[in-house]
Amino acid sequence: MTMAYKGAALSAADEAKRKRTRRVVMASVAGNAMEWYDFFIYGTAAALVFGELFFPKGTDPLLGTMGAFAGFAVGFLARPLGGVVFGHIGDRYGRKLALEWTLGLMGAATFLIGLLPTYEQVGVWAPVAMVALRILQGAAAGGEWGGGVLLISEAVGGKRRGYFSSFSQLGVAGGFVLSSAVFMLAQQLPQEAFMSWGWRLPFLLSVLIFGVGLYIRKHIPESEEFVQAKKTAKRGMPAVEVFRRYPRQVLTAMGLRVAENGGSYIFLAFALAYGKFLGIPNDVMLGGVLASMFIELGTLVWFGHLSDRIGRRAVYLIGSAGLVLVAFPFFWLVQTKEPVWIFLAFFLGNTVCHAAMIGTQPAYFAELFPAEVRYTGLALGHELASVFAGGLSPLIAMALLRKYESATPVAWFLVGMAAVTVVTLLLTREPPREDTE
Image 1: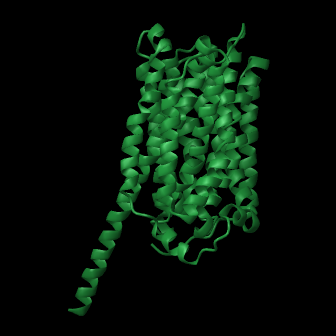
Image 2 (image 1 turned 30 degrees about the horizontal axis):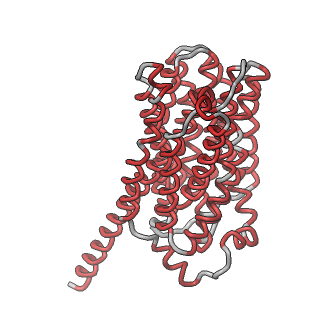
Image 3 (image 1 turned 90 degrees about the vertical axis):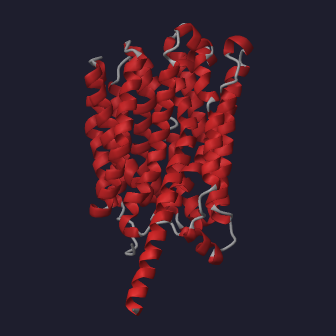
C-alpha cells in the first residue's frame, strides 16, 4: 500500500510538472511571437517601402533602401543596452517582469511607426523619428530573447532541454511568419493605396498584439530555478559579474551568433531587396520566405531534439558548415526568377541551415552561464554579436550590390560569416549538461 501510495503521489507530481511545462512552453511561444512580429515587420518594410517613403534616394533606386537598412542597423546598436537593462531586471527581480516591460516598449514603438509622417510631409524629421523608434524597438528586442528562452530552459531538465528550449524559437520564427503574412495581405491593396496608407496597417495592428501578449505573460509562473538562485545570488551588477567571470562564454556565444544572425538577415531582409533589384514580384519573394519559415517551425524543433541526442556542437556545425555550401547556390537559384527555384533557395537557407543553428541555440547558450547571471549572460552574448552580424549584414550586402551590381560579393560575405562560427565551434567544447529529466 505504501509503495502504491508513493507511486501515485509521484505520478501526480509528474503530471503536474508536465502540465506546468506545457503551459510555460505555450506561453513562451505565443509571447515571443507577439514581440518578434513587431521587430521583424520593420525589416520587411525596410526592404520594400521605407526607402521610398522615409529616406531621400535621389536618382539611385538602391540608395533609399540603403538608408532604410541603416535605420534597421541602428535598432541592433540598441540591443546590447536593452540586454544589460532588462537582463539586470530579469536576474534581480524576475524573468516575468522583464518580459512584460520589453513587450510594452516594443508594442508602443511599433504602433508609433505606423503613425509617422513621411519624408515628403515633414522632411528630415521623418527618418529622424523613424530611427528614434527603431532604437526603442532594438532595446526591447535586446531584453526579449534571453527571457523567452529562460522561461522554458529553466523549467525542464538537461536530457530534453534542447528539444523543449527550441520551442522558444518558434515564437521568433512565428513572429516573422506572422509579420510576412500580414504584410502580404496589405500588399493586396491597390499600389497607390498601399503606398499611401496600407503599409501602416501591419504596424498599427501591434496594439492588439500587445494586449494579447501582455495577458499571456501576466499568467505564466516565474522560473523556479530563478527563485532558488535568487536566494543565494550576490547583489552585484549582473553585467559586471558576467564580464568578470564569464568572458570566454560571452565570446563563444558571440561567435556562434555570427552565422545564424548575419545569415538569417541576408535571407530574410536583403533577399527581398535583391529580388526587387532583379525585377522579381514582391509576392514571389515574400511567398518563398513565408513558406520556408513556416516549414522551419517544424525543422528547428527537430534540430533541437537532435542536439539532445548527438550534442549541441554537432548540430550547430551542420547549420554553419551548411551555410558555407549554400551561400552561392542561394543566389544562383534566386537569379533564375522561377518561383520553384526561389522556394528551394529559401528552403536551403532558412529551413535547413538557419533551423539547425537557431533550434540548438537556446539550450546551447543557457548551458554556458549559471542561473544567477544567466539572463544577462544570454542577452549580452546574443545581442553584442547582433550589432555587427544581423544589424550590419543587410546594409553591407546592399552596399556590395550597389557597388558591384552582383550577388557574388554578398555570397562571399555569407561564407565569411559562416566561417567565423565554424572556427568558434572547433575551438570550444560541448557545454556541460544536467543528467536529470
